[in-house]
Length: 212
Image (cartoon, rainbow, N blue to C red; front, side, top):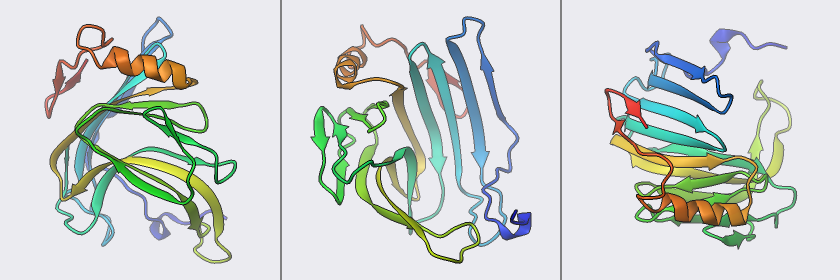
């Protein structure tokens, strides 16, 4: 049964800039979006704004965010990196080369240093300094779309960038590596950690444009 539009809590933008393109080499592309939340009711905040872009080059996706802001002083603003179901509670999530198998688990990796993550599906994440990385491993429950009936539950690993409450001009930079492994992620961390070997350069990341 479809839920009518007026009964849903869709998040929509007041702005109309969003688009993507691919290059003819079959290996490169980009997507960008300029967002301001539409005031659709009490659960929507029109002060919530951000600019985000994704640049796809070969085997990695460069993810940039800037101008993240809102006036919500009660709830932290987050950029989700991953949320994946665990085959078993001990299925590891790897942070900086060390497997996390504890369950439940809740920790924060300090944003003063870069961090690399490898999830249970072989997807890697290389986060540059600037944002704390929050990691949880827990049992999650959710009601179905009607909000009635028995909730579904599952064990999940989740990681996100924590921008804090009421951010003003927050930003981030991270890279995603599909179908990778621990050895490749360790090598990527070394490559991306040096200005002479990093495979891309951020030319601009502000209200005017995101350019790499």
